[in-house]
Image (cartoon, rainbow, N blue to C red; front, side):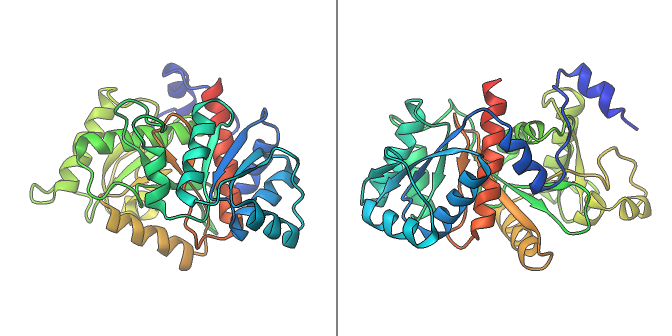
Length: 321
């Protein structure tokens, strides 16, 4: 088996205590240097409840862009007190997102967060060629982090929300984005399982061919900072018993930290199964831009939004080092 400590040292990954729960993530975020989150279309109750929780825990500062009247009405109803200069009036949701992105681009904030606005409109502001947060030709990807009851570690699923049917090149960048998040959580050498329907390479199943290529790219250090292997079916990616039963000899099999899904349909189904069947806690980010992007569903609870804020704070702090 791979010696994680020695190998992570050889590839230059800074070691820190690994975070295994969202409570640990929040506790670490409380000790971070000041991070400011710009929220576009902030006149949303769930978002503001997450802001209230984050301010109580001292996780971040906020700049709220949206309809001032609606924001003040909501903050009064939930007991959130804002200081002068924390609300920026812009009643048009799209323009509010543009203003929030601009705040990050100009250095007035470190993270941008979606409020009560359609994801497509929010991402349009993030990806604007002239005023957005594009980072060269990087692929943006969504990473959903889950705390699953009965598991002793956080599990990351990518990409369940942005890339519809990524090809090999895009999958490599999606993995790199997830590795960055893992490193910020103290996962010095995350194990990445490339998922498919089966654990064998099948020439008629493109996801298995991509998995084999990504595993080889990892072995040849074309993708660094993680152990990557595949293809895996879900069971032998996360269960040591299942991996042994199938005769799989791999440092990733049964021990995966990151699950790379083959397409958005598989990712979306896995994501919602984790939430509704497994009752997992969740936080999510979009990575690959020049700053962390919090893209939660309008249906997500304020707890999910709080966990996403905490993840973004750790990622922003990691980038500053």
